[in-house]
Image (cartoon, rainbow, N blue to C red; front, side, top):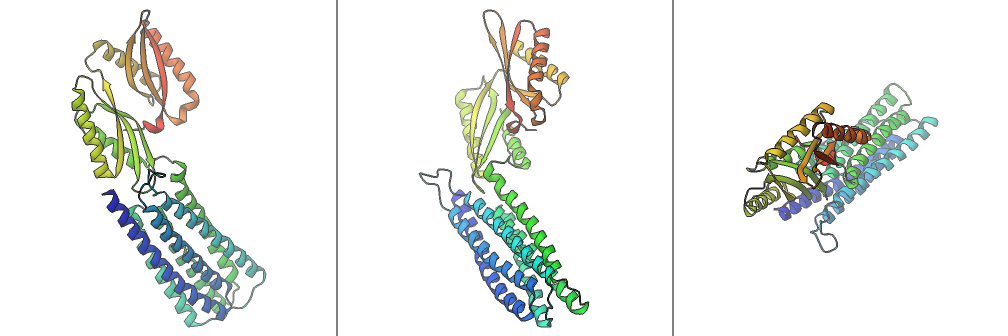
Length: 379
């Protein structure tokens, strides 16, 4: 299934890349001819923008080709992140285009020049907007269907081109009918919008490369699926690693009753891992945590700690709770989960919890480990 998914992603990316190359070459030629005939710097800049889009489409094509390569000895997690790199390159090309357009527009503002008006020029620009609008819809639909950041970036670039050409068209009308020197100003306005879009695209594509947290919806979907299995008492320490679209690896601790036959628990976990691979394209590694459920002393101590945490701060949770008897006292051990917003308060919180436990349970000695909320934010 994963192999078929990689092939279909490559096919979708290849079609998008070829479509972009062909359309943008045609648009570049048509707009360049109109720009040279009319003497409009904004139309020429718009033509150069389409030439830049040819490079972007080529990058998309190459990126999907490299991302479709299977895992090998040097890259055991595959090459799917090449798609993110392709999107990042496209984002930088958008920024370059915006910068060049801004520079050219400022020069035209400082040195206005008349622009020749023709209805043929208008027809070419309107047709260009129609082509770019179609490309925006196509890349948005395909990009959302296969979850491709680079195709979504390409769709945003096509949307920018529609707006850019529309602004050029408005400028052409204002210059001809109102005799206003708007060519440079309109070009600058479009350039600023393109630069903003470029910065947004950089953030979108660089986040997964830097190891950004997975989407909250994905985390909760994984958590709900894990908890849906019979005999699963709780989960914690869920980590999701993104090696590219449809190339996710995850690990989690699953709590199950220690009284169950270990072979039976192992079979359940095996089935869970296979289900995640089949249903969600996630390579899941599950750590088995045996939990004591029939120890009255442990359950009482656990209830006491739950009440103490609720009294100190309702945002605190814990897991891996256990009692370890010793010659002088019993260690009460658990992992405390503290939200990111309260990380600076960890020493105070640990001290307060320790003091409360020692007061209410003098025979117990608390051993508190702090765990990251990033991997335990599970509802």
